[in-house]
Structures are given as C-alpha cells and as structure tokens.
Image (tube, rainbow over all chains, first blue to last red; front, top):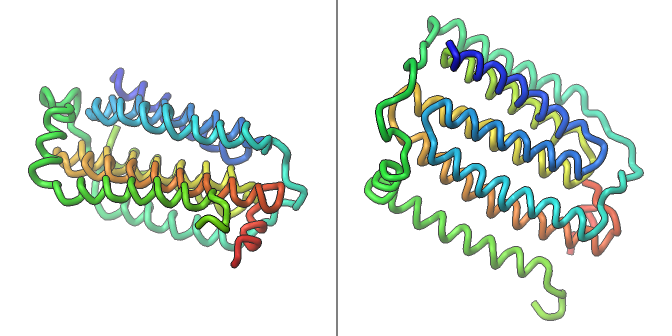
Length: 167
Length: 99
C-alpha cells in the first residue's frame, strides 16, 4: 500500500517537472527542472528494485550532465530568449500523440492487468554485485563498445571546439 | 502499481519530451528535452526488468546512460560552436555550421 502512494506521488511530481522543463522560458530553469526530474527518477528506480542504477543515475545525470548544462549556460550567458517566435508544428505533435495513444490503448486491451511482483524483490536483485557479474559475463562486448564510444565522444567534442586552421 | 501504469507513465513522459523537441526553438531546451526522452525510456526498461525479473533491462539502462553522456558532450560542443558563430543559440542557427 505504501509503495502505491509513493509511486503515485513520484509519478505526479515527475510529470510536473517534465512539463516545467519543457515550457520554462529560461534555459537555467529548464536545466534545474531536469535535475529534479532525474532525482525523482532515481527514487522510482529504488522503488522498482534497482538501487545500483539509482546511484548511477544521480552520479552521472545530476553530477555530470546537469553540471555540464549549467556550465555551458553560464559560461556563454545564454539566458536570453531567442528573438524568433516559437514555431508551432501542431499537426506533427498531434500525429505523434495519436500514435502514442493507439499504442498505449492497444497495450491495455491486449492483456489483463499485469501485476508487478509485490513488495521488495529478492535480496541483491539489482545490486552492484549482480549487475557487475552480468555485465562482465554476458555483456562484455557492449561494455567494451561503450568505453570506445565514450572515447570517441571525448575526441569529437575536443575536435569540434578547436580552431578551424589547426584541425 | 501494475506494469501498465508504469508503461503509461513512461509514454506520457516520452511524449512531453517529444513535444519539447518539436516545439522549442532554444537549442539548450531542445537538448534538455532529448535527455528527458532518454530518461523516460530508462524508466520503461527498469520496470520491464522488474516485471520479468531479469537483469537485462538494467544492463541496457547502463548502456543508454553511457550513450547519453557521450551525446551530451558532443551536443554541448556544438552549442559552443554555434554560439561562437551566431552569438545566440537558436535551432535555425545550426544552418550556419554548414561548410
């Protein structure tokens, strides 16, 4: 019962922070609201039996990504709103919404209510130990590829911001 | 909480992020909306992992977080480039990066 209440409160707060991050006038408010959404998501991860990923979420998203966004915004004083008006593509968005609605409704109709396993899961289900075993035993190739992609990302970012004549 | 409620929550969050990507003109807010869309997908992966009681979804979320970090670094480097060229970050200024 308590998990239902916690889930409902987290879901409502998540939707509110998402909406504010999208409609906020200033990029700083948008980025801070994104940080709040990431904290709430990590809370949801704890509720769903993934404590290790909740920690990873806070460390990487809030600790690294949000700081990167705020650093860029404040370094270049991007707080001014662009002069160009918001260009509505209402038909595009409405068609996206309709597709999503059809998918969700068909998902509801196809099956009965799919109950989640109640209470907390078995001990150590989403722990760092289990995830580490699974990552290095079954998923070694994606693990190495991810490290390679991070390396490419670092070099790409440096190459982008260098002066043209030195590249 | 049933599995369907989590799927619906994830869809709603994804659609909010998609509206942000489609409608905003500010490049930073578009990038924030993109991160929010990835986050919604992460919620879906974690709930599926809990429902099916396997760890594969959580491994996938680790990969998604890695890709998102690399993508944010590249995208913010592009923002710096656009700002140096145009003095303002609008989506339309990306045209000026053409070589």
